Length: 153
Image (cartoon, rainbow, N blue to C red; front, side, top):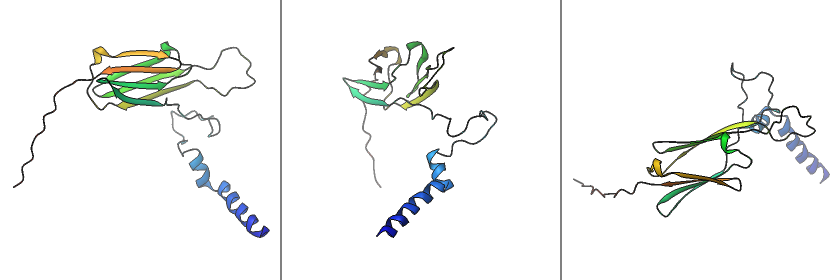
């Protein structure tokens, strides 16, 4: 019975030695290119942060709620082109001239694109930030949808 446990442990340990395992951990996105900082390693590179969002319809309006804790209004940009909403910004967590003993929050930028299910009235969009949540309220165009019959030969 102890031999079976040892064999199971060895199988698990071999996973950690395989290149495939480590590529999965780091998503194999760390290739060298001219725009990549060569001093970065997979252990020091932080994945891009994309805020978690909810998109729902309420009272003939589309509403987006996005988690943006700690983001200043000045560091946030929202745009709409056709039915594509883009939320982008920069989290600024690094303080100048400080001696850090623990630094888990990094400066990072993000860009999230959301395809909207309806055309919206861009001039009537309202936004608000409350308790670390960005609210985007977008009235949508209420055009009558006409059903077109399909004929068969």
